[in-house]
Amino acid sequence: MALNHPQREVINRVVALGGGHGLAATLRALRLIATDITAVVTVADDGGSSGRIRRELPVLPPGDLRMAIAALAGDQDGHRVFANLLQHRFGGEGALAGHNVGNLLITGLTEVLGDDPLEALRLVGNVAGAVGRVLPMSPQPLEIAALVSGIDPAHPSDSRRIRGQVAVATTPGRVQSVHLLPVDPPACREACVAIEQADVVVLGPGSWFTSVIPHLMVPDLRRAMEASPAKRLVALNLAQQPGETDNFSPAELLAALCAHAPGLRIDGVIADPEAILDLRELERECDAIGARLLVEPIASASSRFEHDPGRYADVIAAAVEQVT
Image (cartoon, rainbow, N blue to C red; front, side, top):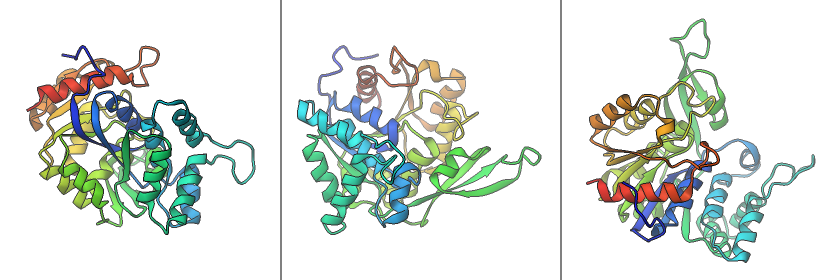
């Protein structure tokens, strides 16, 4: 099933949607096989350095945007040094403790440019020698809200509405649905155009309810995905995420994604065999939505919780060739 030459360019225009480490893993794989890469990044993070920044300033949370740029950084020594600088997190106990240099740089440059985050991301990407471009899914910071059941073990059927990315990701219980605040946010126009012109669109892996599904909650972004002639791939996670997807099988996560965007056609689903709890259940779910399932090792040989870029690129390329 896999290609023999994963570093051969096999895809022209590809858009990857997500956030955090999951999106970064996809970008590191895509750079081996794609000529034109666009990352579309969630902007609802309210934790850590990004959360501190957005509580003080009306700007996009920069953390996931920074990680995407670092994943696409060029291979020259100067580019790698700059990428490492973007990721560097200050230590100590002072005001800077916990902040990433890249978060502060993106935020400061956005202000210098007159609140133009897209130009700030472009310029930072240029200095990093990025082999693709990074765009926010919306030009304004958003908030995630979710309906969660089973928070109180004494009343497992009761549901509560939880607000905030960190709260949704860490609240015990089972996420039933998610939405964004505001409920009808604007989409980044450039992201919509990239999706409309793409040959391939990749959703996932990543924090399923707080980084992957939120893209489908931006109406114009979802409509662009539904209308695009691109082949649509979903990459499932290597493992359950503590708190957010505990006790969700891969098939249930796929079903949850489709429930949030019933008009979105999925052409292919990528899964690592070690992450599948019930292969037949996942096969049934893929059959139900008309998607081809590709089960291949994509985890690193040294850790099943990390993606191997070459393996992952190989399977993405195989999926593109096999899905109709």
